[in-house]
Length: 417
Ligand code: DP6
Image (cartoon, rainbow, N blue to C red; front, side, top):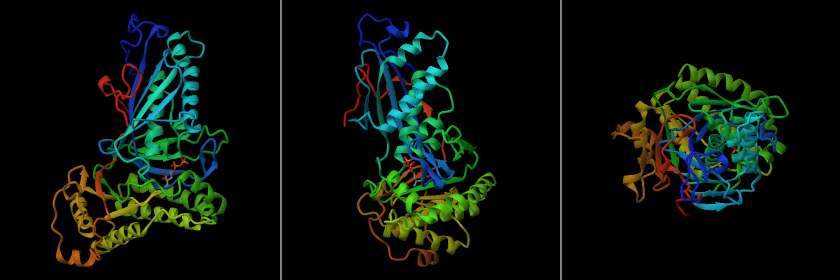
């Protein structure tokens, strides 16, 4: 539990006294991004965010991609307020409100009957929340998943809630429930209409497959053309392929994918990852009017990955794309140096040559002549902005160091947009 008692907010208040007299309670958490290898696309209940199919993802390491959120409560706050990356935004968004309401409900339930006046008064206070990403928002890097997972984690810490929280994070954004766990995570669609069995759980921890690596090929910092929330509902209403996918294809693929992960079988894992990404984008094309998240560059990357695998005679890299053109490549540690060089030669960096590769270190590799000839065809200079090298990582973390809080002792963001 991370509580900081702000000094100076109410002169004369003794820090650590009963909550009714406390000036400021504060908690900070971080949460990860996840990338689905069996995609979630379509809801059966848009209010409770209940999916039409189960999904499975890999949680990415927070050293490279994370959201940090501070939640504070004080009797001096006059309204709930929210800041994203230093800029104040509307706290009245129904999904933010749903998360706030649900965490508070769990806190009340937990204290139910007991005379814990500290939490009860905390619950009557307004909250201030500040959240920051260390990566571009809405660039197709699942920022809403990390954002809502972090909001729910920080609020839960603030109120001392230790329950299963994926059900609450799901109310912020479907994919956010998977960011409540590290490693390999399944979101079970559930059967009940109240959503109490639509939860995420860990299939294997991040330490399970130490050689697994992730390369994010960032091709665009722009906002998505069609937000996934709107896009997936049009798919539910119009795509017969999506219905078949949810009823027949996904249940089989989930069982296969879990087996490949348990056996650390990259051939099986990689092939199924690519096939499921392709089917997701096929359902987007099958949607009427159609939705296009892939562009010429994404198709270029897809072809490159297949040429590379064909050249080696087996699956060494696997791509997956969400609702945006950035590519996420899964590979194994022994392939990273060579494949990064293939990407560098295929998309020669325009200006930022020295920052082209970020994140975990990448060694140099000389590409054999026959690999160059077979794989690197028609280079497109400048098309890939940069490559982020990362790996599977843990779930949400508590930040203990008070100097890391995003809100100051006055309850306002320390950093402004
Ligand atoms: C393509 O979780 O962003 O990334 O539940 O409406 O917030 P909402 O949608 P969201 O959809 C993610 C879709 C996806 C696939 C996936 O992550 O499984």
